[in-house]
Image (cartoon, rainbow, N blue to C red; front, side, top):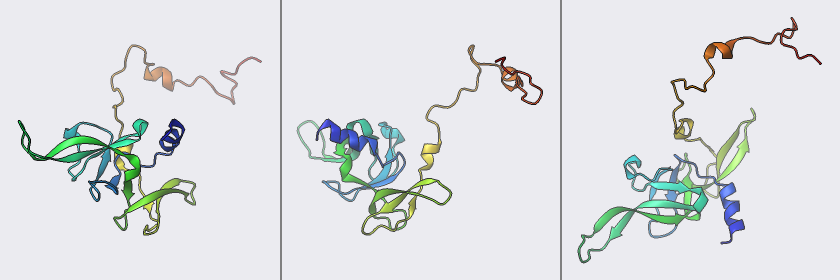
Amino acid sequence: MGWKAAEKIIKHWKILRGDNVMIIRGKDKGETGSSSASSDPKTASSSRARICLFPARITVLVVKKHIKQGQGHEGGIFSIEAPLHVSNVQVLDPVTGRPCKIGYKYLEDGAKVRVSRGQEASGAVIPRPEILKERRKPRPTILGPKDTPMELVLEKTYDAKAGIGMPDL
């Protein structure tokens, strides 16, 4: 894939952090999980597969591997991150629970929403994940040396009716 094609996919990234997704191709086909942006296994969802989004690389990471027993290590199912192309992952339809494509639609009030589309899709609105409403970095609660005091912020310095604060033209 050339860089232009990759750039086009990145611009129209439709899988968001917190979406319920399913792997549709490959060895892990049928695995479902919640997408996240962290690569820390401790913050992973409790589903069977944790899927991390990396839009800049056009890959997602799947965390489940079957490893054969070898010299110096045991075999079994381990949590190892392995890259998977984003085209092999689809969002689950909230009504049917099947993988679907994502389209956009404008509601009557002007809000832009994501809708499920495809052959077996219900056409239902896919809600924005709750995790996106939280801030990653909390706002600072302590005023720093460069912060403006609240009294100066709330002070009224302009009144159009009285002509106070009007610039001289």
